[in-house]
Every structure is written in C-alpha cells, then in structure tokens.
Image 1 (tube, rainbow, N blue to C red):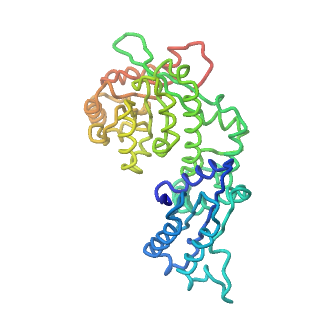
Image 2 (cartoon, one colour):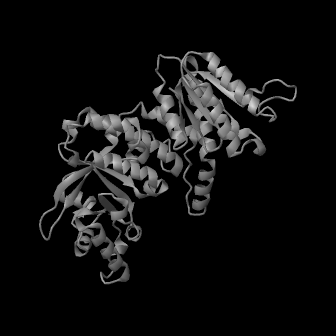
Image 3 (cartoon, rainbow, N blue to C red):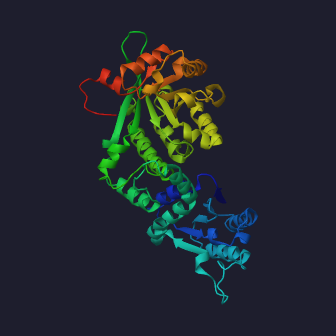
Amino acid sequence: MALQVITQGTEGRLLEKTRELRHDVNTNYAMHFHFSQLKAEYRSDFQLKIVINIICDVFRESAGSLYFCRDGDIYVIYHGDNKSLVDKALFQARYLFMDDPLANNTDGTENDAFCTVYDLGFQWNSFYKNLPGLLSSAVRVEIRRENARTEGQGNEARQMSPVNLVKLMDDLQKIDMSQALRQQSICVKQGNGPLRPVFNEIYVHISYLSNMLGNKYNLTSDRILFKYITRELDKYVLGMLGSQPAFHFKRALSININLETILSPIFTKFCEDIKSIPPSSVVFEINVGNVFVDLEAFKAALELTQAKGYRICVDGLTATSFVHVDRASLGFDLAKVFWNADMKSALSSDENKRFAEAINRCGNNRMILCRCDSVHAIEYGQALGISLFQGRHTDRELNPSSTIIN
C-alpha cells in the first residue's frame, strides 16, 4: 500500500472523498499543508516535489491519498490509527522548510499555520467547512478571469461563492431532486413522415432546481463552481438510474455527464448496476468545452465507455464550432448542434456550405440538431441532410397536451 498522489481534478476529488468519509467508522486523519503561504523562493516545483516524496515515504505502507492543489497547498488523507505517522510527516516536512517563516516563528517555536491536522472521527465538520478555503484559493484566478470577461456585459447576477457552494450541497440533500428531472426526445424525421422518438435525453432542469431551492443561489453565475455542482447532479442521476435500470431504460437514454464523473468509481458502480441493459440503449453526452479542456481525459473516457458498447455524444456545439470538430479524429459517436434562427439564411451561403460539408464528414445519421423551437428548424435541418432533431417543437408534436416545458 502507498499514498495515491492526485494532481488532476484535485479539488473536486478531495471534496468528493471528504463526503465519502462522513460516516466512516474507521480512523482517518487529514492534514492540510498550507504551502501556498510559503515564500516564493521556497515554493518552487522542485521543492514541492521533494516534500511530496517525503510525505509518501512516511506513509509508504499505509493507505490514503495525497492531493496536490493548483495553489501549492497539499492535503493528505490517511486511513489508519497510527498518529505517530502523521506527526512524523509533519516534522519532516517542517524541517525541509525550516528557514521559511511559515514553518517556524521568530522565537523558534513551531508555527501552527504550517499545517492543520484533523482527526476526522470527531473533526470531520471542521475539516469539511474549511474546504471552501481550498476551493476559493484554487479557482481564484479562474474566477477573476471569467468575471473580467463578463464585466460590462450587463451581468449583474450575484456570484456563486465557494462558501455558498458548501451550503448548496447541504440544501441539495434536503430536497427531492426527482422533481427537477426532465426527459426530452431525440427524434428521427425522414421526408414528410412523422417524428419518431429514437431515444430520450435525461437531465436536471437547472432553473426549476433553483426555484426548488428558493432562488437562494445563482447556480450558473460562476463557470468554475458550476462544474462542482454538475458533478453532484451526475451522482444523483446515475444513482437514480442505476437503482431501477429496467424501469428507467424502457427506451434508450442519453445522459448528460462530466468527464470527471466517467473516470470516477461512481461511474464504475453505475456500469455494474445497468449491466443487464443493452449497451446500445445508453448514450453519454459530454459538453464540447469539457472535451477540449482535457483531451487526454476525454480519450480515456471514450475508450472506457466505447469498450462497454456505450455511445458518446459531444454537445454544446454551434454551426461555427462544429465545422472545426472532426468526429473521425476525436472518435465520438454523435454530435449535437444548437439551432438558432440566424442559421436559416440562404442555403447557398458560404456558411451553410461549410456547415453542410461538416455534416457530411460527421455522417448525416450521427448529427442532432437541437433547440428546434419551430418547424423552420426542422425544414432547415432536412435541407442539409440532417434527420435527428430535438427541441420544443418536437415536444409539441409528440405531446401537444403536455404542460411541461423543457
């Protein structure tokens, strides 16, 4: 056994692991090394790698995880009751940085700010409540960059803060999220024939969820923190579908999901739960932004899902971005492009010609035109060879008496 060193998706995985330990009856210790507060000359990548090696060596025969965060802070979660190992790791790490004020006070005494140690058996709440500090420091630069980008665009929405994120996660445990679940059909239409449902997309209606929470949170106001929220929603949806697969998969389903979720133990369990379902009945939708943030993770997720016979759909595409996405080289199965009324200009325009060429490269039967709110969207798509459609117009055609709005 040895510590698992985690350097990718660190903050989210630490948050997830901490929640898993909430009711763990075994002894677990957490250590938070506040290395982001070290002076620059002691905070080089080389020095941080040395301290990681030191800590891993101390716990070389123990189970646990080391989380190396983007701001330089290190968290260790150690599964065991030998407190002397915790003290040994703290002593050796402090010795490495003995000349930095963070390690020792001016009078030679140890600086408590160097590392905080938690016995999670009775200090879990304290550790968990301090995690917003981690999230805040880890995403501070990205949040500032995103806020600067939207400044002056009339975005006066109250920002979703890391502290509010923790409160939100607690509130989500108190509501029946099934009320916020929606399904919307993806339909095939050939010629003048009727729309025929092929599979249903299942997703959480964010606006409705916000209403259920009393509109206390602006869930989408911060792109970075919204990622954490959607990963929690992933867990709920997969858990719900996996609990009664025969009931939920009466028709093929597409499921919105994050790459991080696919590469997590939660997904492994879900696959086990639905092993009786034909793989061709399962499609996973991944947003194009998630794909290009980490192509290596996308390739790993693609390999994992397609090996099981599932299909991957890349969504969030526009007609412009779709032209630059090559399905053959990326290896996904389906693509979903947003419809908007501006697209219905002359079909002979250069933009539409490029779009049509991209559809042919992708494969007409692998392309979904979504957000189709009128018959004009269907007509436009058919003119370009598209046969798969999704949106409020298809909802009305299939269920004219329905009052549910997707």
